[in-house]
Length: 341
Ligand code: OGA
Ligand code: NI
Image 1 (cartoon, rainbow, N blue to C red):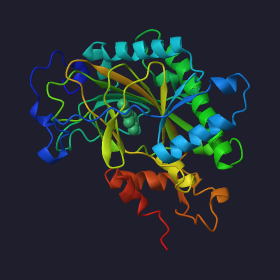
Image 2: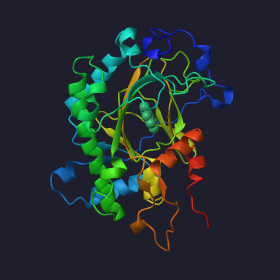
Image 3: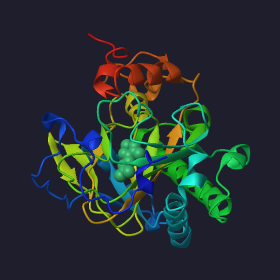
Image 4: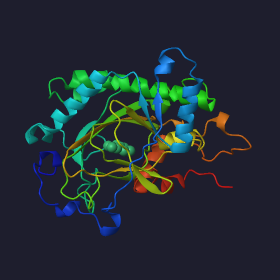
């Protein structure tokens, strides 16, 4: 079990297998921190103000910036803090307990692993442990979740329900902005839900490795709760920019399926994670994922003479396997689904 980096303490020098080839390293150059990431405040809507302005902000952020942070999002801060503590405790549990969750099998509904599911085959490893499990409906999956820490099932169960509500609410506001019928994304488009928690111990040399590769999220939409240690970077206009965690905010990242269904109105920005030399970092991601057999295609209302259909219809499963075969490269995967001319 020495594979799991959460079992390491006080790493003094870079283990060879985590050192990237020179051209893949993030390097020593400082990446600028972005101070103008859009922040959407949902309070005015809760206070019954006209939602039109907030909807426009979400639309603009998704179209022009690519992602945004949300405050006054309705997920209780106490629950967010509790959930973060529970996951930190989980990664700190004895190696023997965590070993029972260790798996590189993508079909296992609850799994703990290091780097990627290809640990044994990959050339070099990413500096992270990831713990991930399904969580909707909670009652179908809770039996597979850890029983330690003892609050795990209770806290993570409540959290899963709350963050799902939050993301469906954001999707509904996007529907209003795009001119799609309300609840367009409910049902099969958002049927599955995964929690995915990244844990990185302090890294002796962050210039040599990454905590997560450059990627776009392949699902419909993602939400991220960060701790106060920075690490997330987005590719914006060809440049990496750092995200400074905003206390109590939730970050929303449109996934590749939202890009396709919106007929390219929304982007699905590329992002990556760099490591930190002094502090451990934990982030909680929640992904809404289409069911395997659902047909994904640009929404009819968004296809017209000025905006021809950019993608053919496909099943999510077809997309996901192409994405995997293409090494999680979104542009390469979309080549198989784009309509040309
Ligand atoms: C992801 C992701 C970023 C982070 O899990 O897809 O991009 O900061 N996570 O952990
Ligand atoms: Ni991501």
